[in-house]
Amino acid sequence: MDSIKELIEVMKTLRSENGCPWDKEQNHISLKPYLIEEAYEVIDAIDKANDEELKEELGDLLLQIIFHAQIAAEEGRFNIYDVAATIVDKLKRRHPHVFGDAKVSGTDEVLSNWEIIKKSEGKESVLEGLPASLPALLKARRIQEKVSRVGFDWSDAKGAIEKLEEEIGELKRCIENGKQVEIEEEIGDILFSVVNVARLLKVDAEGALRKTIDKFISRFRYIESEIKKRGDRKIEEYSIEELDEMWEDSKKL
Image (cartoon, rainbow, N blue to C red; front, side):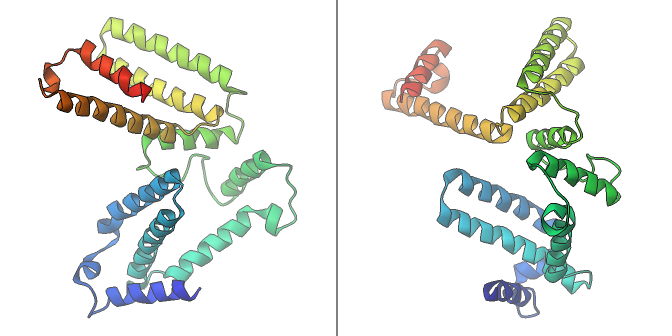
């Protein structure tokens, strides 16, 4: 607890008259990119299963929260203690099975009750509150999770896979018709359906895609290194067949 208080005081000092020029210039808008960046660095540390790195990145993310709260405090709007009090109140209100007399049978009922409680708080839609700036794959999953809690969902992945196949068929027809606007729409439908299949199979589509991207980068860099070793031609002078052969070699490694 003392270290949290010290962090708050450090931030106050950085923002004070004799503090850091850069820190004093910042506002909620200017800090937005750093908040997003720090959140992704936390995710990277989790993926690496590196505790030391995770501890450091969580600290960087916490700093951003303290930073925003300090700016608000200087303007007399709220402070970091108000932020903490707000989330404590919300957690207790939305967990009546822990802090009240409600009974639940398991996780599904907890999530269902969560949406009911949010509605009682004045939320007009189960989809309310989703940030517009969420990455598309993550936003698709969160939408699907939310509507699932009120019963709008497939019973298993089989129905979602059939829907995906249906969307692929529609894309093929649009390609034959050559209508670019419809092609874009169908690709969007396919991506949304892929996320749904992944969710029902308990796979994080965002994380799965990141792993595939990392794998692609690793294999393509192998091709580049092989070409550099040969030193006979530039990569663009190789045929696709030659490049594909090296790609297959990279998979063996």
